[in-house]
Length: 276
Image (cartoon, rainbow, N blue to C red; front, side, top):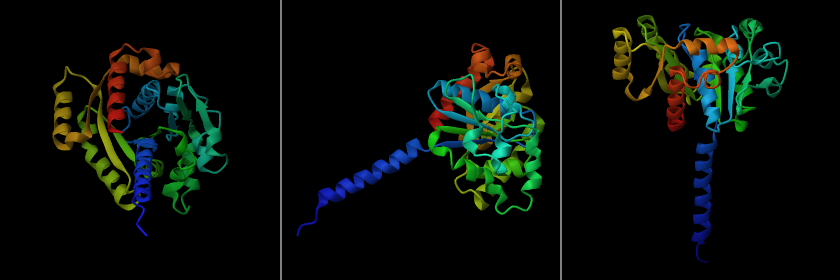
């Protein structure tokens, strides 16, 4: 009996199709991390997510910072159960999702209660995987899941790094921000080696860039020389409208889409789509 090559060909074609489908359709879970505060993590999470939603992507933002700045920035209610209740097992994570003023952009909020998770999980088994376990229940429904971490390398940030498959590092164009970059990269590589082999650095994005200063240009040049293709071309300028938008609970594409900060995040969103 002759071997049915047509059946084998169809089987292989179906396998390749499934591999392609899994690659294209798999959710991009991106963690925004930097142990230094005030570098633009929350601003980048909210505004990049908003522009990706404008491009037709379904985006979920997760506020993993007890300060709740991302919650405020996109105008959701911090009194509604959020990520703390999900991580502590008090409520199903799907029930914590809130819609925002941007179509296609959703968020899970945070508040000061999240500080208690460090104590609650201190002796928990595989405590670094609590967020990862929750996100696995959601990932089939989203194109992008963004995780905004607190300005530290503690348990919450570690959960963010373990749950993600990409990291974006917002880097302020100042000397002290540059000083901590090597420590952060070492932490990411350590997490990749020991806990999450899927974790990759998608890119470093320069924030609060002031083209009038020599220091800003030097920081961009030094980091670009060292990290090469890991650096986004888009520069996010220092812009007062970016600072004002969170107080109105709006991302910059709704607050002032024509300002320089909005244009910076629009270009960054295009880069992320290409890299993703």
